[in-house]
Image 1 (cartoon, rainbow, N blue to C red):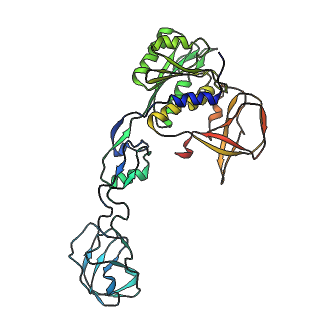
Image 2: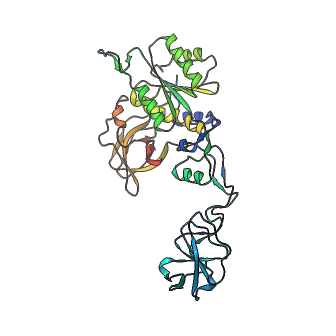
Image 3: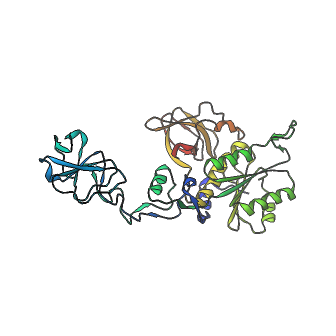
Amino acid sequence: MAHISFEESIKILSENLPKSKGSERVFLDSALNRVLAKDIIAKFNNPYKETASMDGYAIKYSDHDKELRIIGKNPAGSFRFNKLKSGEAIKTYTGSFMPDGADTLVPIENVEVKGNKLKILKKVEKGFAVREIGEDFKKGDVLIKKGKVIKSAEIGVLASLGIPVVDVVKKPIVSIISTGEEIVDLDSEYEIGQIRSSNNYTLTALAKSLGFIGINLGIAGDNKKEIKEKILDGLKNSDVVVTTGGVSVGDFDFVKEITGEFDLLFHGVNIKPGQWIMVAKAGEKYIVSLPGFPYSSFVTFLLYVVPILESLENRKIVKKIKAKLLHNFIKTNPKYQFVAVNITFDGSFYVDTIGKKQGSSGILTNLINNKALMCLKEGTYELKKGEEVEVLVYDDLFR
């Protein structure tokens, strides 16, 4: 079977991405990093009355040159006074409503107080330190648009609106299965020739770190019944089922047998690592079979599984940026290649491969520390120090 190009595989995947999932309601305390499902519209002006922005004395601007009589205090949360008359002042605090009739706030440091008498020593402009009605937002304003990822600032706005429960997009669910008779779990005895299971743990953790729900379905040996049960179990409870290992040319017919209704999108892409990546649809759900090598499975999960999950939640997590190389780099493999790099920022983004091992699809330790992948198009060539390259960033650099 001929491999397709990386660009073609991404085009096919893009044309077959799912719509976002339905919504659910969560308490505000649980809404952080969730995707908003509905616009948030202001139901009132904020502030809904003129408000003092500092401590001082509320006056009529026209009374600047008069000796004023202090008639009381107006603490935040209080609204006890009738319309302010000429010649009067009220001590007013940050966040307090301005008394009716007052149009200016004179700071405490600008006045002299003797008993209940007030003299203004330094004038201020009309309207000084007064927040106008609707200065923050007005009734009917769209304050947060649907599709926005809720962060701390959005939590604050929602709280100020008195919204205890928020409509958010349901989180996508991905189940991960490691396959192969040579794979043993963490608590099993280890023999020469066997491999400790890491893919299911790594990819489950990756999914969770990106904000999705990851389910570790464990290991399935090279046994059709066992693999079938795990895949069917995953399809019941997940949007995407990911298998690692066993993606050679003949294996996809078996997956078709398991799912009953199977739409193969592609199998085999001219990339390194992960050339035997397979992506298929089972109804409205997805089966993605990744290579068994840890580094290969990690990279192809980012390239092909994450876009499906992003589409389901209507948000973009993995970003492509431009960065400059800190040293020369020779690309010897003709395939579209993804190389683990260190990334730093000093006015611009910079990448290097210092400490990264080249040549093996099994070196998962390459992904420790600053997490990014340099994207190198097909062909063999040399990149010079200072050249700009495309980099895939999947850590918390932008989150």
